[in-house]
Image (cartoon, rainbow, N blue to C red):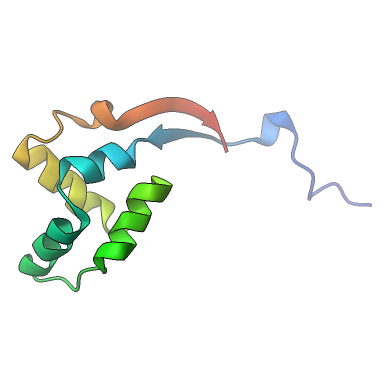
Length: 91
């Protein structure tokens, strides 16, 4: 039986973990964030979708750069390290 489906400790990937809940909370309510995305000229996700991001602590990749830029420019976060929870978490 091939062992390609088995994962050993040596094969685990180490990834950083980010606190996206803090990022979303820093940018305002789900409704205001959706409106801000619309005002920037993009098709915004529904506010309930943004609430789901906050609940799960995850943001779809296509929105992360925009939200990070807004948070940094507004001073809601001082730097990216502020959102770093742990930089050595096995995947």
